[in-house]
Length: 310
Image (cartoon, rainbow, N blue to C red; front, top):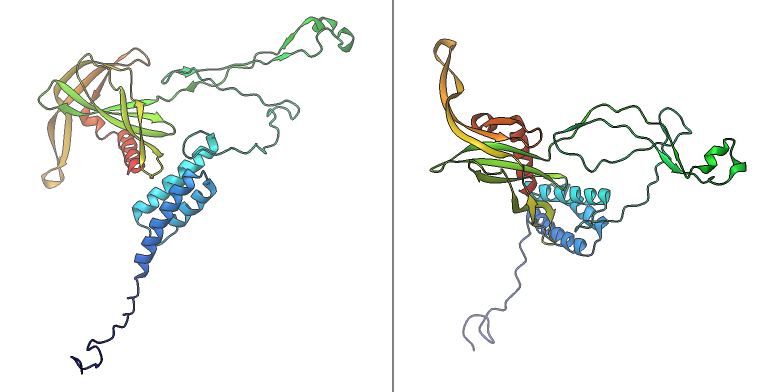
């Protein structure tokens, strides 16, 4: 005798209960989290082929959330960009030697193609180019090797000038848009976009008369740290534009709305006008907040930036 109906010790022997079957989506989500951990490790080990493989798997996983796929796509884009430009950031990779064939000029298969990069251009300005080639004369001093013996005295042989190119306009590095007045202050709120390492970044600034629009800001960039979080770096949002005047105007904008019997009703709206000196051409220009907020370029840049840092 013991207590209970099982005899001996009186307690029922415990039998392990079967583990409930795990939902397939839950298991897939756990696997995705593990893959992101492996990506972080592969980044630290600079194993970029592994990073690409894992990020692609996440993108193709039917259980990956929209945020997971967006993060995976951003990782793939950064790896591809780093491999293309061969930078030294977290995703840098050695660029393989080019296997492209030797390039020749369109006018002749025996003439090598020549091009150059102008690194001193100013945004907003238009340029035309012409060029000529100078070569070191390897026959200098070798009079008997040349038909024209006078050329043996030239250490450098100079070609003819090319024809001028078509006009080339340099796109601006920054854009700014007026989004409204700063309430309670004689100031305006502006959004500034700047081109940084292949992406448009955005910061907001409050400006008054006499201020230069933009400046240095520590901001989130498109690059990731080892925890796959956006890196924060000091970025120059300076536009060089100087605020000359701020004023409210009526009517600056007429809003159209559907009225009775198919007619349109118009109402006037007060808008902020920002007058500024444009450094690109030295001209005085205006921007109106009511127009800027619905500007097609502003909407596009803002949408791209929000997708970038989400």
